[in-house]
Structure formats: structure tokens, C-alpha cells
Image 1: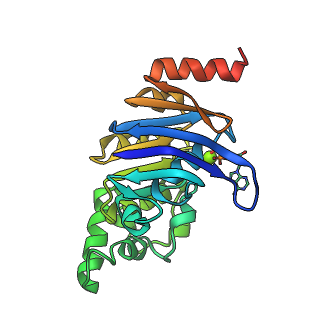
Image 2 (image 1 turned 90 degrees about the horizontal axis):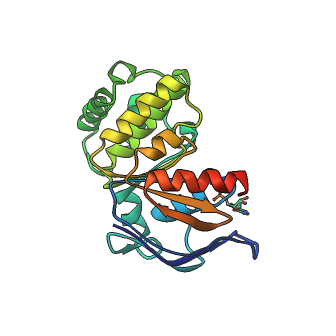
Length: 228
Ligand SMILES: Nc1ncnc2c1ncn2[C@@H]1O[C@H](COP(=O)(O)OP(=O)(O)O)[C@@H](O)[C@H]1O
Ligand SMILES: [Mg+2]
């Protein structure tokens, strides 16, 4: 369970508040965050795994504070970026997943087989020795997801994970995210994807402008964007 208690964010090195004090409890399995560019979606998402820390108030995940228990929170909250290149570090696909497994699987050989198994489970079984740069954008996003899942998180936060993908890859990544056992918090501009969530949060100017069921949330977002 994710809890925001009066959490606000001031942009680093400025006095500009980019998230107004926000109190939220996120317990639903599938939560979507939608809203205009610059409305605070990424800030809200990054607070959940401690990539951004609250300037006031607190954010906790299963009772662990993102500031005090940062390492534990990072392990339980996997984060998927829009551009998977941001989180792929090693030269090949298998090495990259193996890197994510270094905490949980100690032996080198075991780690290599676990990495291959993780790649297989996500449909990249034949890509283990392929350079991450040679993968397509869609394959890279799958690899990033495999790496995130390898850490064993209970929550996945995905910040526009399909924005850079073509329609086929978008559908594929959407289906994978939909099938995960983990709680998934997804920032998206894809209103069809948002409509499949249990709960949708609409951000506007650093505040939650609407919070509720998808149909009403999408209608609220459309009204906001139309300026009515
Ligand atoms: N590190 C930062 N320094 C200054 N301004 C920032 C910083 N991070 C975000 N902002 C500003 O805060 C606002 C919200 O950003 P963000 O959460 O990235 O919005 P979104 O993901 O909805 O596009 C934007 O106006 C952005 O320019
Ligand atoms: Mg963003």
C-alpha cells in the first residue's frame, strides 16, 4: 500500500512548488495517472520509489518511508522509464538482467541461468547475447521490465512506458503489464490504457484535479484540456 501524507515537492534549487501537498492512499491493483504535460505526473510517480523525495510531508510504501527506508523501498518498488535506455546498463541483454539479480542470486553461473529464464519468461529468450543497442525500442522496454521484475518488487511504477512504442509494441507491453501479479501504477497519455485501470488520478498544475473511476476521470481530463 502506497500512502502520501501531505507530500509536496519543491523543484531542487528553486522555490517553485511542483507538487502541492497531496494526501492519497493507493491500494488498487491498477492505478493510472493522466494529465497534461508538466502537470506533475512524473513527480508523483517518482515519489513512490524515492527517486524524488517530498519537501514536506511523507510517502510510505507498506509502511516504509521513502526517505528513511530508501533502499528497502527501491527494492519493493520497480520503476520503468519512458526510455528504457535510461535503465539498461550492461552490454548484452543477459548481462543486464543478471546485474539486476546480483542481490538475490549469489552464484555467477546460477545468475546467468536465472537471467536467461527471466528473458525467456518475457519472450526474449533468444536475445540473451544480443547487444542492448541492437534491440528494437519495444524489445528494450521488455528487457527493462525483465530487469525490474528480477529484483522481485511488489509494486511497479511505470512512467509513460509505451509512449515511444508503435501500436503493436504498445499492445504487447500493455498486455504484459496487465498480466503482472504486482500492483501497477502507470503514468500514461493512452486513454484506452487508463480506461482499463481500477482507479485514475488526473493531475493538473501540480495537484490532483480528479481521482476516481476511469470513465469520469477521462471525462474530467477532456474538460480540463478543452478549458471548459
Ligand atoms: N528538477 C526540476 N527542476 C525544475 N522544475 C522541475 C523539475 N522537475 C520537474 N519540474 C517542473 O515541474 C513540473 C511538473 O513536472 P513533471 O512531474 O515532470 O510533469 P509531467 O510528468 O506531468 O510532465 C513541470 O513544470 C516541470 O517543468
Ligand atoms: Mg512526465
